[in-house]
Image 1: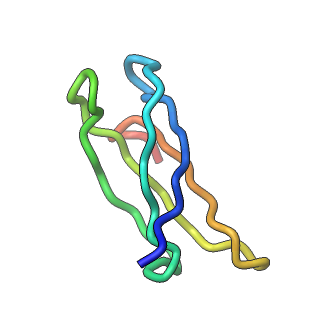
Image 2: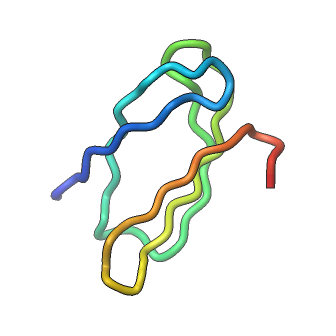
Image 3: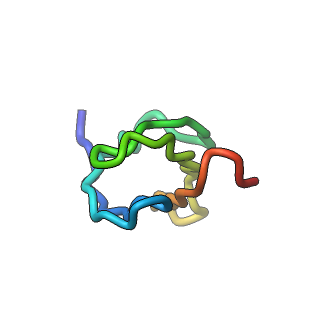
Length: 64
């Protein structure tokens, strides 16, 4: 399994974090993972672009 490393900033506390994505298991995925620093729930939206690259956005749990 080849994981892709990417950096995010928590939408609550703004702290930098590194997360690992599995490109072989993505078409379009939504999930929630707690911040490693403030423990608040971050909503992850992961999708695959037309060129095969991954696109990740993070937001507050209750944001669209």
